[in-house]
Image 1 (cartoon, chains in turn blue, orange):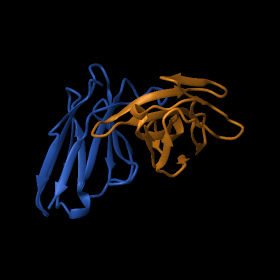
Image 2 (cartoon, rainbow over the protein chains, first blue to last red; image 1 turned 90 degrees about the vertical axis):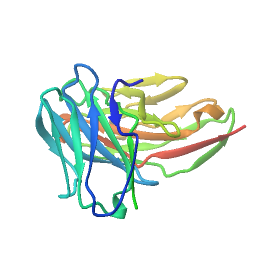
Image 3 (cartoon, one colour; image 1 turned 180 degrees about the horizontal axis):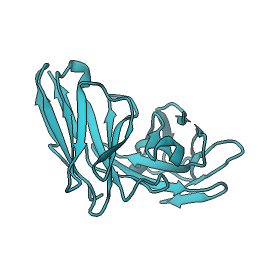
Length: 114
Length: 113
């Protein structure tokens, strides 16, 4: 158990809809990262938050947004969903914002857009 | 920008065979290097790491040495088991990359009994 909790584990929704994925980092970790893993592809970095503030942005679509709340949990909002958004979405956390620390990953949310 | 390149899979080996998965990186700073493993249906978990040149990370029989001169961090294991079947990701993170972890494409390993 990594200590990172993601909900829900599975999500099936229709094109055009909006969903929210939730992540609770390990206790005490201030940084949260979101990644997208599509079928047969590696992990694409989407966005990082550190102590409530956006720290880094990757290949995140404009239809996607995220935030980190005062209790440090984070939500990834995906809107106007398309078939191609079907993927595994992982959240990871680290204690701070220093890169030498390993990231701890949640089990992921599998999103299926039909 | 920073990037990681690892050998394409899948890699199929018989039990007790020697494993090498090649990984090279491009980074403007002095990155930390990682190998993560993803077992079927699970999230990623850290396998080993090295934070400076010439460091060797090791865990569960796997090893990788941080080679700055060749910008490489190849994963090796002397004798694989069926239970090692998984996807292996090479990764790096450093300050100039905004502290995020950047992953290679992943290499799927199948080990046959």
